[in-house]
Image (cartoon, rainbow, N blue to C red):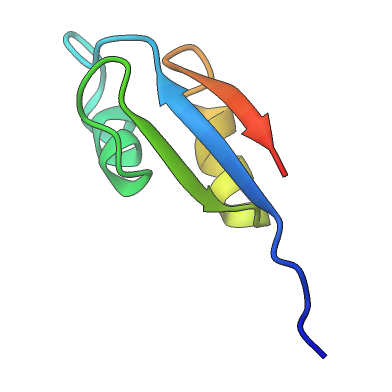
Length: 64
């Protein structure tokens, strides 16, 4: 039996310029480093926490 994996797609909408090093590292951890870049990630509590930390720099495009 195959379990469906929940995913979440995020897009970077803000620049990491003049942001703290930990916010830049969080964007890199999410696989984002340029404006309008999108990544589809597993929807886990760790990923949700990372998105919350940089919520002013990203937007959720799709939740599946």
